[in-house]
Image (tube, rainbow, N blue to C red; front, top):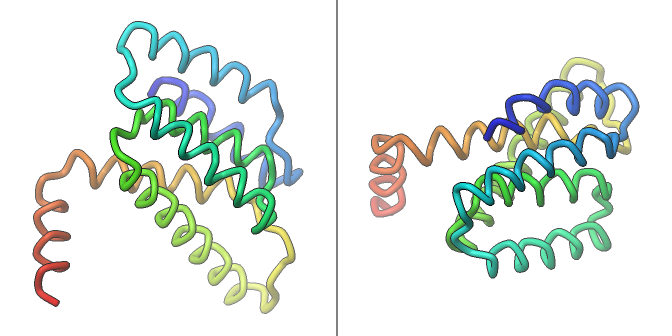
Length: 149
């Protein structure tokens, strides 16, 4: 979690400005995350490998950048998803945040760019996921909302 807090702003700035995520940030983020995982432990390596396959498929099919793939994999390693459903919720949150960013840009500038900086959406989705994960009220609300249909 420390790596997310340290590198979120520099990665977002670099992605918005240059549409590239520098590997030096990702490398240091990996080192800090690896140290955390050594001391805390990991619960599901199978989920991490499944996430790798899904993200590489998105890289090939949807055209997201390799820096974004590496960033999401590092966040998956940091958050240590226990089941694949948590990963899919995280991916849906990323696409929801990216959609909101594209909509806001369209409303403000009147055009849609061909490529967007996905790092801010990734970090917003991470904050949403962490907020929903630790909040019992949000989980109860989501459960009631789903069961009301």
